[in-house]
Length: 212
View 1 (spheres, one colour):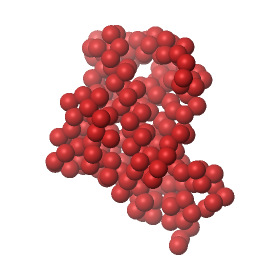
View 2 (cartoon, rainbow, N blue to C red; view 1 turned 45 degrees about the horizontal axis):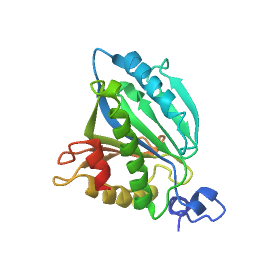
View 3 (cartoon, rainbow, N blue to C red; view 1 turned 60 degrees about the vertical axis):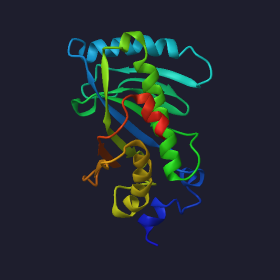
């Protein structure tokens, strides 16, 4: 077994990330913002919503971060012990963003499915807010899945051999025929990631969540 494959499969028991099971997925569901709102308008609405959510009990929330002033930055994030959620503006393309940190269980595909469920559940709740009804339109067939740990999953063929079957297994539940197009991140200096484009999916974010 090579060092790369040993790392990708979680073969080093001294590494707590591998010992506990991989947890760090960064997920994006791309979206369109109403032209009359733009980044500032939608960010202000989300800040108001997250300000209310932050006061709720049960989610172990720690902070509310506003990076809307940063061009192509992380936007507005609600930060918890187990996840981060918000609207991201990377590469000038807005997305509903969910970053898992801990609390996932099962094999790799099950953990990815749980993280995607978190994305869809939080997105459905945000989109269900009255002030968001006409502000943000999710592109239900446009996803990005990133493995946010370059030690456990460097962007190389050995990692892809482990990660891609898990990605494909989850996508098969989300999207019916035709199969989605999955494009790996080509830049080996960046994280292991997959850009997904699909048709034949659900009509709502809630329906996507029910398919996991």
